[in-house]
Length: 122
Image 1: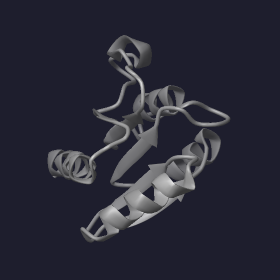
Image 2 (image 1 turned 180 degrees about the vertical axis):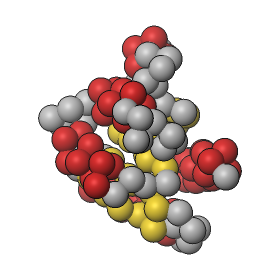
Image 3 (image 1 turned 120 degrees about the horizontal axis):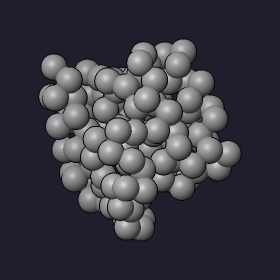
């Protein structure tokens, strides 16, 4: 069982991801914008993060960059959800996500991406 932080501003998406991952035994926590997500990650680092690329306040690429360049959080795997093409150079190789999942996503594809990230941490 892992703690998964879902960072997305769309309530329906958050509910769907929560249902899929809790059904696989994970504890799902949420944040609705980039600023609150960064605070939550700092206070209670999750085992894996699912991050929407298009967030209010601070966008997903910047949230990811901050997580991946901070010594205390850089080891947390980040799966970025995107509905548009994002070139790895847009997010930077050193501050980019560990995986991308395209929206709309297939539930099993997202769940498998999370499981792969958790397996890599073990």
